[in-house]
Length: 321
Ligand code: ADP
Ligand code: TRP
Image 1 (cartoon, rainbow, N blue to C red):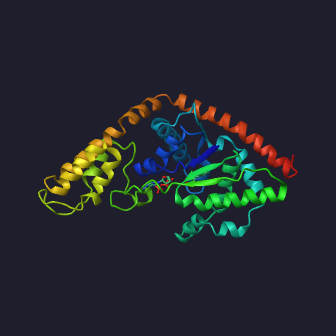
Image 2 (tube, rainbow, N blue to C red; image 1 turned 135 degrees about the vertical axis):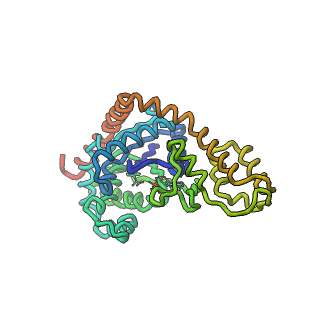
């Protein structure tokens, strides 16, 4: 049973990414074989700064390693270090109907927002199908927004198998709707596109300021607040503080006597402590980028061993080899 997922190096990761995607991925390492990669080819559809891309890619690598991705146990690599994926993309593209790509939500959403489309953006789901099929993947854990892309991958795999004979494993998506949506500083879903994030590895002063700036209502500290469970700071606190501490603060807010300023201070402290071990680990790793590079190189080697076998199978089946 092989699990595979990709993460775009499109910016700084926030605690919504951590609790929604990274923590489940890190926990999955205990259950089976995991293949995780940094989707730098995909980032080319929306980011056109080479320096940024390189910086984000290494930043995301540091984040994952610091947070518990274990490179002994899992295969972790940079997508573009296994360029075989682009050949498979071509092969799969010839079996992908235009209509299928025209119906992709992510493509439609982006063009509706006025982002001018390039071929890469249109072909994005075919590259994603190649990512998945190249590694004989069984399970693809993704957020809801990516479900359609995994369904397209299945359609493309089935079409290939029907046209050229059984070649690819037909994967299943594993949709994480059991993990709660982490709210952002304004109460909407936390997302880098809404500018309402708390970064996992944010700078101390800036993050304290962000948290202390969360807007609350004007009730006095003494006033009981029966809706304490809906309070944004309480919801975030439940993610980063021990359960008894979070419950205690929730009760005090509920019965009256706890001010919002003290609550936000507690939230900042617990957030800061929660990520302290990972922060220290990240600083250590950042001081040894040769190690990080070696991890990615070694991951690419292991990924490539699987990829070349599968690509060979696809070439043979389609009459190329
Ligand atoms: P963003 O919305 O900040 O651009 P991405 O779309 O890059 O985040 O998401 C990367 C992963 O993190 C996805 O698997 C997504 O489901 C998860 N994720 C993002 N924001 C949240 C959130 N607020 N709560 C839970 N999971 C989230
Ligand atoms: N499209 C995914 C996202 O934006 C990232 C991704 C690229 C991916 N290739 C993948 C995810 C293959 C799962 C499997 O989140």
